[in-house]
Length: 314
Image 1 (spheres, one colour):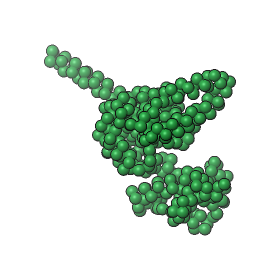
Image 2 (tube, helix red, strand yellow):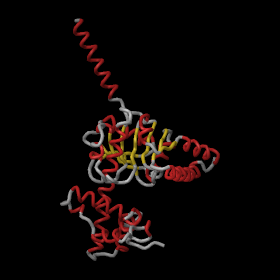
Image 3 (cartoon, rainbow, N blue to C red):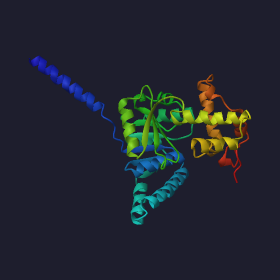
């Protein structure tokens, strides 16, 4: 009887330990790597919802520009949110900004963070090297996430020793306004990590959706082939770009036609995505590059940011 009792106690203790180890991570401290538009937006929404944030980039000048952009964005939010109480709006801005610190040394700040969100250049080698380096300095419980829109999360996770604590966390631009976040679970991502990131996304006031590690996840996997097919329709001379744009706006209720959207996003960005997918699966008809887009990118006609893409801009 005593033996049976001891076995039961051990069993209960093991179950308790397993339950404790499976407990979700409550994300309080966030490190955002990359002070560009996406990184700054992620830092802003995290700080505005009660998280302590460290924003990291290569130079103090970049970080100063990022902080200035965050402040301007926050003041727009405050003006709308606290229209009847400007003083409360000012307090909201100051409190949020005080929750964001900056650093040019990622390795020195990740030791005490719960979540690292990477939002740097879309380059597999550069991202992998970053994660491999930070893996040595981050705490054991720290979750790593990439905001990539087109690269394989599994490939990035394999650069670390924490594949179970690695996932995709894909935000949309502009981050403060767009409600959607795609939470990408690789075959190695633990349920604990996945649920922790779903909860974190909700605390930001976002609506998370789940997707496996498939090229483009949900939105871009559907959106990019649609954009490329619009270009093919135009290449074949079957409709003008103006009529295709008008048809999709009036017939499908889209706010922008495909050519307007391509110019807004940047033709180089879309080309980068489709080229990457073509490399992964060259026989997939959806992933075939567009000669017209390749020509425009080669001529540096990238869309609104260069003044000309499929359309001209003043």
